[in-house]
Image (cartoon, rainbow, N blue to C red; front, side, top):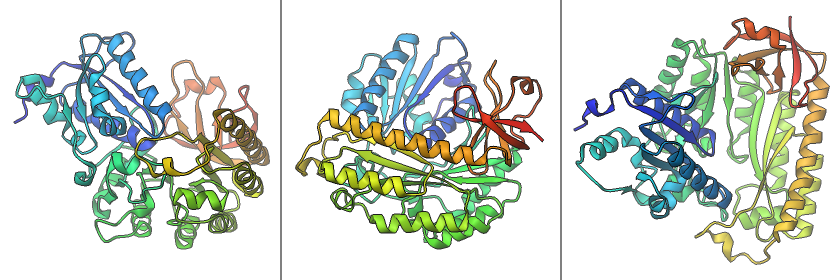
Length: 442
């Protein structure tokens, strides 16, 4: 039984680490608590409740989680501190040992956050750790929210069945599962009713959508495209072997799906891809990029690349570099390999020294910067439509074109109410930071 009176007039602080899925879930937690009378702290206010949603994709992520937990405890010394997310699922005992942590919720338990808080605050239970074994993680928690952003994030799928040799996410999130299409369409319509213009589809392995409902990801895209008041959709990340040619063709011809793809490659060496137990090779990946480019010549394609994993010899890396150099993509998201306890990769020989990882990462980052600049430069002088995103106090408005070029507007425009509107602009030269093009409203 939930005692709702325990939540009245409380103030909460939130912090999210990791992926867009985590951000979507944290925003949903904040909305749930807000409906119960919990407000979000501002400025130097002290919180009664702190919620940290964690990531555990690398050992660096684990370290950042511990740092942030300690910081939240210092900044809000009297708060009730809840830690959830992947790090909480994989290392609950270590999290619970951190000073000031009151409640640790695993991947399945976070769905019942309100009940756990009620039980803890009312003294019904004093247990600190609540965590289910991976094989028993089966619930799907709906999430569609924007937090303090303009774009909404719709969680369509959770979990992963792939068990790549370097990855702990299946152990943190459980097996693949999803909501059904009618419920997701209702959530998208709800965003439209709130005035939302753009939705980003999120999940752990969203191309695997439909395993639990007998539906397909393509059917989901088709259904969402019919929610006419949503003007833009983006697919956050999709495995290349699950991105079918039919999906690409549908997005190219669709009403609202943007020419923007994020596709994890991980390595441009077929030898390394086999060691990783990835389900494609470089030939298939190159085919997907060519198909996107043929269907949507100005599409933005982002690619994840892991550097320095076990088994990545110097020759393998050079193969990867050459493959990416010749690939018509716009940005590389480069991650150095991190050893994760319990993963099969630990049995692969040939460990890449940290110094070599760093050098390889820098080479790929330089290649990425060159590709992105070439793509932006190609669009200078063109007209584009930009969804303007809310600006922090004192900052200029910014937004993204349909093909994900970041656009910054003159500070003078900040006095007008353009937030969450789609406007036509002419793309100008780079801004001062060289991370966006200047936009002039047409």
